[in-house]
Image 1: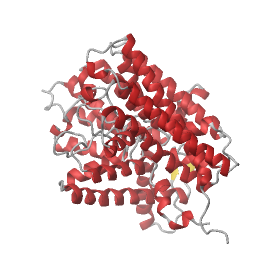
Image 2 (image 1 turned 90 degrees about the horizontal axis):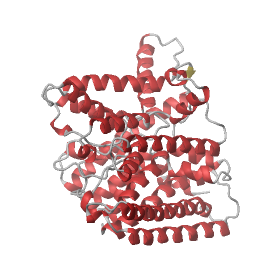
Image 3 (image 1 turned 180 degrees about the vertical axis):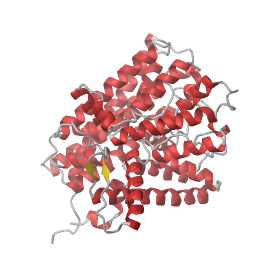
Length: 499
């Protein structure tokens, strides 16, 4: 009698391949970290060592990944995957990447597994929240490089990279691509998903290289330039310093990083269209991009004047910190240069609103996304008009394109799920750790929005003092936010597993 359950062994092939690739990346971090130590020895001895721990983690990941890949290839000869297998593959790839990405922190920094898992998933999802309050003492160069590299890999997406490297997985590749890069609908992207994936990674790598050069020319060390470029273009926010970017105390470095954070917050598909057409008109015809620029400009202007008293009525200093704060928040990066907890309540409210909004669709940023905010505003306006003119046909447009009803429903459902997870998660953290509700809400919001800083923290702005249960929940919330809920929540539907 045939089983009522689906055979999902085929998904171990993409999962195994990604885990093997992750092992290679861990090994490269060990090698490059060792080379930097040999060629440019650090002043702090804490930055030395750690390579052996990373090599053990690399061997473990490559060994387990190969076993999964080999077993799947033997039991499921076809390389193509179905829609359901694609959804499961995306979820398992991210979960597996978090588990094996945590091993270097376990072996190299002596962290508990739940702390290491939190740190690894925070990196991969480009959240930037941390449980390590003493980065400069605890992490060697090799671990710092790995910590930055996982953000860079997670920024554009490990699934997108997999689709680029393995183009023969059939129609399931399109589903995998869509689950990880939702909203990438910009004109000009090539119809073949593998080509699109390679194109996005090429743009991403080129911009990263450009930022490395810009930071290095401003007297940041080459090692720290690479680490910060990785975590800026991914809009991740992990720094090599305990004080984050504030440790450099450089106007030029702050402006460079802030500008590249904003570059990483726009839709990469639009960049390709602009390069292909050799014109910026593609960018400025896009409704979401124009709305994004408007939100940034208004927020920077309001915060500049709102922070004048905080910064001794110095307009240049107020602009410096306002521009960086808006960029780091709307991009969901989470770098710090200022103590935002000392801001006046209206300025803190702007930060919280930007945390909800996030970046553009098809970018490396988190949040609800500007595209959805624009659509929700248009839906609301349409319903207001419908209240007094019900006989007219009301349509919602993005530019000249009529948005189908299915997309509008998706926006409404997404927002409802987001708020439901925020409310229930806040209640859970309050119950588990006894923290005030605003503190719990800030922690869950930063996890779901993949933001990094968590407003209303009681102490230092990190997650070190939370219980293991709260850290595990926030880890799950980070994955939910990065995959925009559906790919993970589908696994909890019984019908998903049946034939």
